[in-house]
Each structure stands twice: as structure tokens, then as C-alpha cells.
Image 1: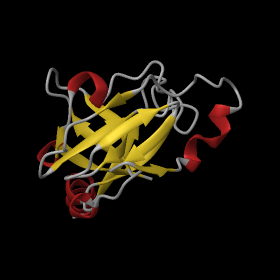
Image 2: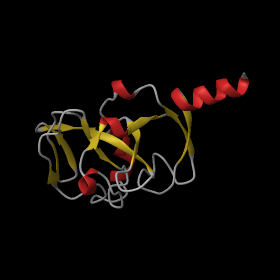
Image 3: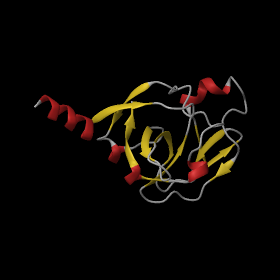
Length: 146
């Protein structure tokens, strides 16, 4: 019975995820283990950290939600704009002191499709994210990281 309960919790409620890589540092560091909550997919908010399936491999990817369905996202001079309104990224405040060019080159998106999200890694200089592979489908999201 206990094994069945552990299996069900792991399959449907939460499990552990191992952080592999530096694309989310310094907020999530290489080698850390975090909890992945699988029952929160319908309630995703801007700046949540999500885990999703890669389209090109069986790997799981960890990134931060920046754009929601219907949004237009742009970066100008290391500032995030959502629908042409500047949005503060407080989780990156400790990074801007290190290097003023730390975040990302300027870019903009088309309108984000229904049931899709635009994701970025916190370590923008080395992160392969929606700037490279485009929007992610909500159906590919496994859960949120806490």
C-alpha cells in the first residue's frame, strides 16, 4: 500500500527534479534538487518556474515564464516590456550589479499564441530558451518548481 501511495504522489502530485546546468543560476544552481509540483499547470503565472518536455529530445527543461498567452514581449536596454509596459524582474535584481549587459540583447516577439508561453532562463547570456526554440505549448509543461 505504501509503495502504491508513493507511486501515485510521484506521478500526479509532486516529485524531485535535479537541476542540470547553469541557465537558471543564481536562482537555481547546477546540482540542486527542487520539488516539482504537477497539479499547478492550469494556474501558471508570469515568473513561475516551470519544467517542460523538450521538443528535440527526452530531456526536461527548467525555465521561467515571461510571456503569457496573448502577450507581446520585448527587451530593450535590459528592460522587460510586456504589451509595451515596463515590468520589473525583481528575481534578477542581484544580477544587474554584476554586469550591466548581463541580461539579454534587445528582441521582441509576435503575439503569444493561445495555450503557449514564452520562457527565459535567468542566466540569459547562456540560456537556450524561447529566443531559440520559440513558444512552449502548455501541454508540454509537467509542473512548477518551488
